[in-house]
Length: 252
Image (cartoon, rainbow, N blue to C red; front, side, top):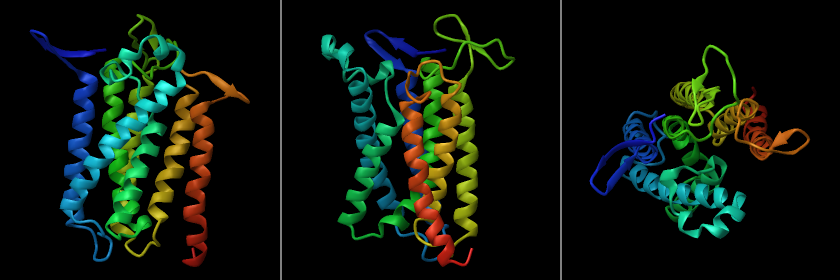
């Protein structure tokens, strides 16, 4: 774990924040480059629009992720309100960030009269890429940790206990998902609008459901499942609704 990258006088640079910035810059740069190489009709967002949209998504996503985390731990922040904006200490919930980012995507695409589903299809792979990089920040920060384990892949956690590196497992899964989505994006130019977004939602829901069984920082809330797993079930069904009707209409 390496929570602090370096200190220079009163200035402290946290690895968590650095990785968030790296995730944003990398995803934005790759997405803007890809917009120039997508098959005709698939790129509904230009490179400059990608940059504008991702800036908006970054801000709203971080805000949504933080508000979700604070809402989950409101009793703690009730007595420590000064810690609410301290995201460099960790404490961002992905699904909160997803909802915040999705809201800004809907707003931006509607504002510019761009097809919602096609716009989401264009950016979906790069959301997975940025998310994967961000999870490395979670590992360096010591949050989102796994259960205590003596497996060969275990690492020493911030508490000195050997733990499963769930952050890196999720990061690797997201990088693979990014590559798969990019391949589909390039090869299935005729896929109906929303199809790729559906594949992304279903795939991530399955990844998160599995990772949650290995996490050591989550609490079971109902039927042996954590809140994140319950949300993943909803995301899975949302993905199915985007894929299945369009498969039938497409003769798949």
